[in-house]
Image (cartoon, rainbow, N blue to C red; front, side):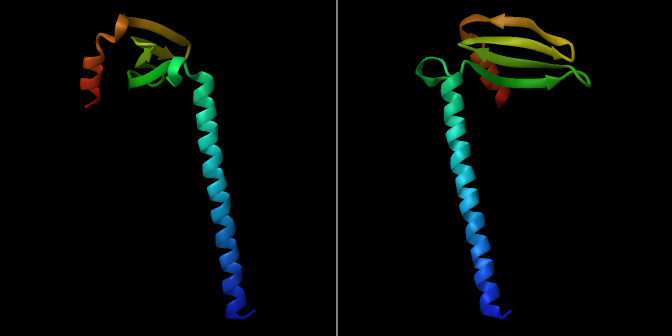
Length: 101
């Protein structure tokens, strides 16, 4: 095999890989958009938004989530999920924004 044939083979493999990666990127984008539409509420917003989580044990954690404008603190264990606190109308949104910083 001479150098020209080798370079053409290598170029064909690289181009094929580029095409496959581009198709995968487009497919993932379409799947993400489709998933957002299926799970979205009015105006395409996601009904559940994850804000922050903190581990409190090996399998236990607490998480702060926002569900349609209402912020909730939940406890997650191996046995289930419990509501720990609730703030209606996203009043503590300023506090959660400060936590993110």
